Amino acid sequence: MPAEWERQAAIWFSWPHNLETWPHNLAAAQNEFVELVTMIAPTQPVFVMAAGDELQAAEERLGSISNMTLVSIPTNDAWARDYCPTFVIDSNNQLVAINWHYNAWGGKYPPFDEDQKVAKRVADYLGIQCISPGFCFEGGAIEVNDDAVLLCTRSCAFDPNRNPNVSLAQVEKLLRDHLGVRALIWLSGDAIEGDDTDGHIDQLARFTDRQTIVYAWSDDPGDLQSPGLTQNLDDLKSELNAVELGHYRLIPLPIPGPIEYCERRIPASFCNFLITNELVLVPQFGVPEDLKAIDILKPLFPTRRVIGSPSKNLSVGLGSFHCLSQQQPAI
Image (cartoon, rainbow, N blue to C red):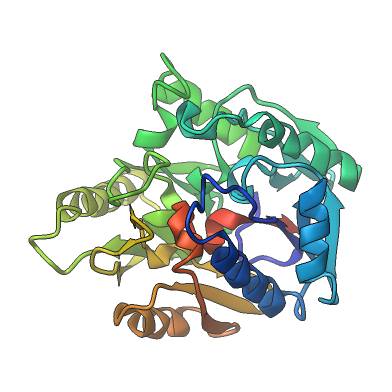
C-alpha cells in the first residue's frame, strides 16, 4: 500500500446526500464539499460517486468543474474512505482493490447495503482485480508510510461488533499479507469525543513523511479527551521503540476545544487532513486553532501547498476531508 503522499492517479469521493447524517445542514455541507472538489480538481483527476436523483443533483453542482468525473455508483452515505477499496500495488506493478467487509462501524447506521458494494463496483469500473479478505475494517483505520510501516488502533480492529474473537496474530498476518506492511504500530484508539468510528487512526495520528508522525493532542489538562490522547502517545512511543524502527519525529497537532454545532458534538481533529499530489487540505472549523494547525503542518510538507478549507458543516456528519476521500495510487 503506497503512502498517501506518493503519486496519485485520482481521488475518489461520494456526493453527500444522507439527511440522517446532516439533518440540519445538508445544503451547507454540500457547499463545503463543492469547495473541496473545486480546490483539488485543477491539480489531479477527481471521481465523485452518485446515482439516481443524487447523480442529477451532483451534476448540477459539480458538472462545470473540469477534471471531475461523475461515476454512477449508488451509496448510502458519503464516507468513501471507509467503503471504497484500499488500493495496493502488487508484485507485477498492477493496481489491486482490497475490499474490506463494511458494516457501518459495527452496524451503527443501517442501511449500508449499497456502501458494501462500492469497492467491487469501483474495481469493476477501473477494470482491476478485487480481493476480499473477509475482515471487517475501514480505510480510515489504516495509515501507512513509504517504508511499509502501518499505524492502527486496537479499539477499531478488535471491536466485537466488527471482528469478534480474533487474535492479534491473526490480524497482523492479514494486514501484512494484504497491505505488504512489515511493521505494525498499535495505538489504544478511541479518544476523540463525538467520534463514532471507535477510534479511526485518521483522527488520531498521521504520517507526514517516512519518519514524522503528527498526533492529536490537547494542551488542556482538564479536557476529558486528554487521558485517551496521552495513552495513544504513550502507545506510539513504546511501540516504535519495541519494533526498533529508528528515530521518529513525533509532533503534537492540537485539537480544537469542544465544538457543538447543529445539536451535535463535532469530533474535530486536524489530523483529518487530506494529502493530494500538490496540496494538503486542512479542515477548518471556524475556531482560533485553525490557523495554528496550518502553521504546524506547512513545514512538514515542503513540496505541497498546505491550505485550509471550511469543514464545520461537513463535520456535523462526524468526519472531515480524509474520511470523505480515497486516493487511487498511480502505477
